[in-house]
Structures are given as C-alpha cells and as structure tokens.
Image (cartoon, rainbow, N blue to C red; front, top):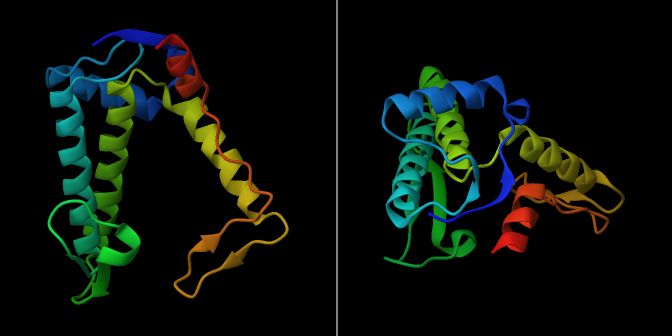
Length: 162
C-alpha cells in the first residue's frame, strides 16, 4: 500500500472518526497515516460492509431491493425499490448509524480525515439550490445548472502524488 498525499491531522477528524478508528484498531485494522489506496482485500471488505449495512437499512425502511441482471448493472434502470413490509424504526436508526461507521471507517482506511470532506460536500450540496433547481417526480433534487461540484483536497493531493 503506497502512501501518498496529505499527512493526516487529528484536528481534521471528527470525534466519531477517532472512535471508529479505535474500534477498527482493536479489530486489527490499522488506518494509514497518509492518503493512500487500500489494497484489494481491504477494498473488498469495505465494499461488503457498506453493502451489508445499506441492505439492512433498506429492509428496515420496509423496502425490498430488486436488481435485474447478474453483474454490472445501471442503478437507474436495473434497480427497483418497493415498500413491501412494515418499517422498523429502531432498525432504520441502527442501519444509518452502522452505515456512518463503515463509511467513516472506509475514509480512515484511505487515510482521509472526515471533517474537511464533510465540509466540502455540504458546501457543494447547498449549491444545488441555486437558480434552476427542481425536484423529480420521485422526490430527488435535480441540481441547478450553477451547481459547484465538491473538490476534495485529499483527492487532489492523492492525484498529484501518484
């Protein structure tokens, strides 16, 4: 795992990320000290953890996920989500919390502090509401033509170093 990019800074980490990393270290997962691309086993583990928690959350929402096709698929055309059973409020809360842990842990395994990333995505998301935004029939916000995409310093530093 070649380390590149920005040196991590505990001041750039939320208290949640610090606790998540403590949990990970106790489980034998040691986050790198700089932005880096995790090895294949780590990437596959993180993908499985994220998918497991996302599917548990979808189920707790009272929904069923139906995917057409076997391998590569287009989320917009090959995935349907249907409400088929009663929701479980405790399961929704637990699923969302677990998703936060596994996604924050994935940032950690990439050697990325979460606070600068969250600030930048919040900034970018709020630009979606500039002149010209609208809501699709399904409720999703369609961003304004004046939307400003997120620019992550850790990604730029990683690109420059590789």
